Length: 518
Ligand SMILES: Cc1cc2nc3c(=O)[nH]c(=O)nc-3n(C[C@H](O)[C@H](O)[C@H](O)COP(=O)(O)OP(=O)(O)OC[C@H]3O[C@@H](n4cnc5c(N)ncnc54)[C@H](O)[C@@H]3O)c2cc1C
Image 1 (cartoon, helix red, strand yellow):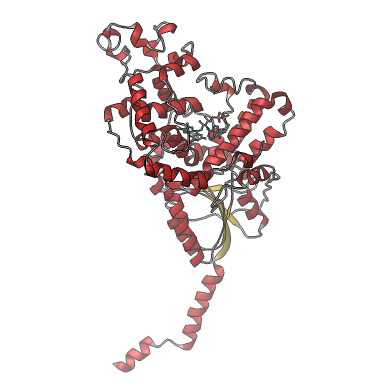
Image 2: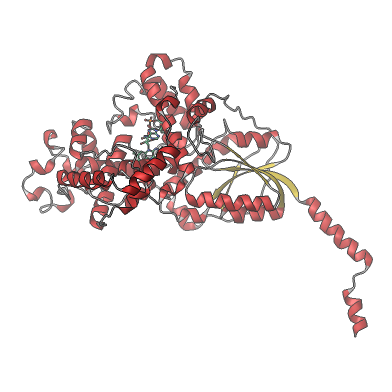
């Protein structure tokens, strides 16, 4: 018996060598590849990761990942994925001529890279650094460790002039200008075929269904449209840029509308900066173009803040404001989200952003101010709702801006926007209001900002034809503003608020002297 066993277990010498040969062979036959991991950089030009992949002799795969765990997040919306996927279709049209395409994979990043590294010898992963939410930050930390253990080299290129791992903002402005003035990368694509991969997990049906959106009123996605919008802005839409910037109707045309293309990386900040700065028309319209360039820098400044502290998505920038108590009022929240507050400009703004995905800065700020100050609601209950509506949603701008308007930074002047005055100042004739609130179609223009004064009869608001009725105001806005003023300004003297204020000033701001001109 024991003899038999020995016979069975002990492999012959030539068996061992055949196992070893097979093992060696499988190691050898694992194809070496590089990967380009696309994130919010969905374009084919001024793209360093794609250039690095092309410059290397190793075959490469271009990946875009749809990560199920991120689809569950409260800020995620199908309109974001729609924009990204359409941008990729656009890239693929360009790359097809060179035998290349972006592979869209549905699974969490760790699973995808694990599967790929079983099949391939991944040498390098090229991507841009991502200034994202805590979840993507943590995922990247885990991936970095995983790649290290597998000896995979992950090369992340900085983008938008945002710098990873800085302690102070001194010198940031100078470096930002240097980055914006660096040569644009001219990507060239060889005909070398990219590697075709086997990993394939189809998109779930409910996700595909959720992508059949009514996209007619959205800006069209892709690199080609990014340039179309930028050039039409420079050539003929920018004349009244600054004078119309807060008018909710006119700004639709006179603003650049480039935000969505920057957010998904259809165009880079550097491309925008140089196109405008060095355009032959620059000197003829200097004031407006400088206004644009200043805002482009604000964009990166806010993203830098978020890069340094992405917890701003969930906690007050100034921790002292966590102590400010607020009573949640679900009815207020729902009315605000549905555009049924009874304040025409607030309601028109909400309805417009839900339908089109865009709103000018002033209207975004006013919505936040009304929600947090007049309605006295916690900023966290409104921030994700607006993030889902904005086609240009960029966490690095959105959360710091939302908190700035909510008054939770402790370093900025608190602005409480009077919704009636904003309406009188920026939509004088009620054009925007009438576009979005059919209930007010017959309301005379001089009453459009405060319809409750004109229609003293309750019939108009509620009783006779409810489907035509406009809401009565859900609060007295003057009382709301006065309460907010006392509450928030009173809290500024709180010890923790003061302590935090100093910390924030040290970390995120720089003296005026250090801010150079465009
Ligand atoms: C609560 C709130 C949330 C916001 N969330 C976002 C967001 O998720 N994504 C986003 O791109 N912008 C956001 N903004 C900033 C701003 O409202 C939009 O960038 C702007 O309305 C986009 O339109 P535009 O491209 O025509 O802007 P333009 O006026 O033509 O400005 C040019 C570019 O500068 C940048 N920019 C302009 N204003 C600001 C600003 N105040 N702060 C930072 N960058 C700015 C944008 O990238 C913009 O595309 C937010 C503002 C507020 C008040």
